[in-house]
Length: 314
Image (tube, rainbow, N blue to C red):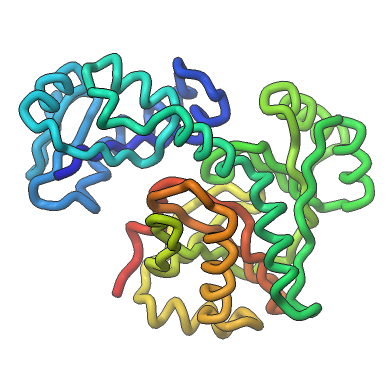
């Protein structure tokens, strides 16, 4: 039996690293609008944690935050299963009466935060390059802590992408080819360095499709759950997932990519098991297929449940 929670602010909370965090208003609205989203993966006896039951109706039992102490007194063995873990969520659950034995400890949260930082893609893509032939090697992202280094990279790689270390659904990402002036790029980089300490930079890509491989990590073993495909804006923001069977999606991927999905999954699994040491749970790996058939296998790793997981069809 599980207690499910949709908390889309989890990457923002990870970025803050704080035990007390208030997400942006638009993220608060998203959480409230989709607080019943866990119905999509809930099992018969599961409960769903919501901000306010109000007029909500569900075939599953709904629980409000102020009732958590009573729930854990009634069902001490219930497992908490949020969209994603962060320190602010742990603190709030604890303040509402959830026993520490039902919550991840500080070391686990710190490990999630470390791995969720986009500099993990430097290691992931470097390992990919060590395991593929020359024609499939990819440009490895760069991390810069100074505005001077950011701007030098930008001037030498026009049309590059710049990313905040932690962000969600394409927010915190800029495509410098999308009507960005030098002044706006510098202003954006200064703000990210001030708030998060660095900026991730990578070369632009002539993309034809965005995909994600969906996974579950258990005791150091990565299990492939399925492939998802999604659309993004020219600025990299998530728009929506495509709905199609796994067989059709695999055929589509294999027709667009120079490497078959089977090969990609095998290589990703080996690399993920080396890098995501200490992580247990669901996660997704975003990929890009380029016009020339090359793929970028580790655009980012989302250490949480993903929208793509909701669209995996047998």
